[in-house]
Image (cartoon, rainbow, N blue to C red; front, side, top):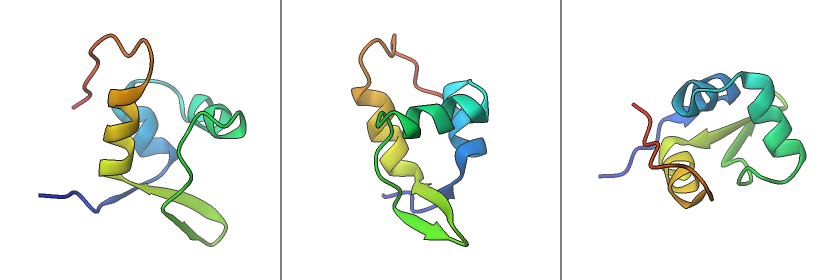
Amino acid sequence: MTDRHLWSYKDIAAHIRVQPDTVRSYRKHGLLPPPDHVEGGKPYWYADTIRAWVASRPGNRGRKGD
């Protein structure tokens, strides 16, 4: 089953236990996948996109989130 909920910077930050500004920095430096959706100039990602990104991150130390 796919999770098509859209996540904001805040949602991603909560998932990987960092501050939203850290997630913004990841995007600025090309470390975050491209957004799946942009609304009102704000980027959003599908939960599955972020979970796959987290799983593939070097040094994720098995962190799976909630």
